[in-house]
Image (cartoon, rainbow over all chains, first blue to last red; front, side, top):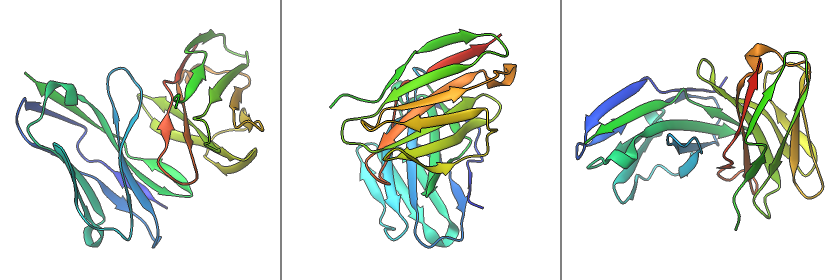
Length: 111
Length: 111
């Protein structure tokens, strides 16, 4: 069965530090999608990125970057120069027919 | 485009009662999924509807049911409420198997 593991339950950093959120998944599927979502204290989940299993190109969007490595079944998320507004719970999600959410990593960015 | 809307936002019910939650997807989106979020279990997939048909289902008892209307609006029903059903219920819509866009959720408290 598919499984998404986010081993880091909670991370605390000081503003401007870089932080990487880890995500490892298990699958036997050859075609699938991976996502990252952000859930700020307000509660509404916000879509950040989608990757399909055939696209291992890393992506950068402003201060956010994602490293997808199929060989290690990992899809890690890095925030560069973190800001207080980045404080949230971040979910890594696997999708093939159904969406499977990781347990989430709570990021606390302190001023 | 308007985002995903969910009504009501907050609800308090008594054990044994039933409840119906409503979700209006983003215009043009045909898939609607429901999730239950609790501190202990995290985000768990309930079911997905696509063009009025249940396409996928999670591992929840039969007390949890849903339906989708021809305009893609969806309702979720929980019968014979239990204390453990207290949770944030999230609805998400997507076009096909694209990224999901989430609503603000309905906070259900069962007393």
